[in-house]
Length: 116
Image 1: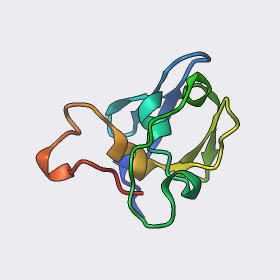
Image 2: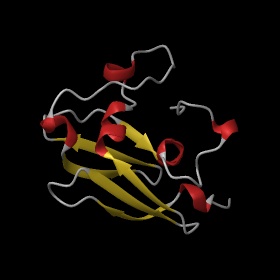
Image 3: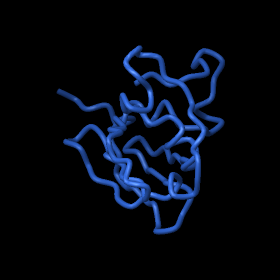
Image 4: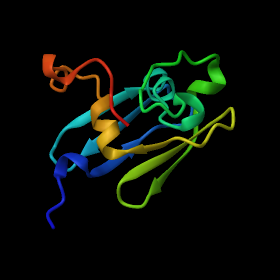
């Protein structure tokens, strides 16, 4: 089975105290994620509920915008742990590519909201 290079992270950078996380993908694309986007679109059921609809939730404070840890989940996702202790969101690589805010990823047919 050939793995889609668009869905394989090859480097992840999120320095302590930063408000952004960068991901380099195997297809050569580089994504920059403001933490307001990552936290606001946290895919966990506690943040999004159980409807299947993804909505942006404005982060409440600075502790919600600083990452404490990033851990790989299998070969398909990242687990993000925030300084306020929230750590239940599993961000699949497919979901992260949909969250990319760059001009190359923005297109009219993409829609306004990511899919979990």
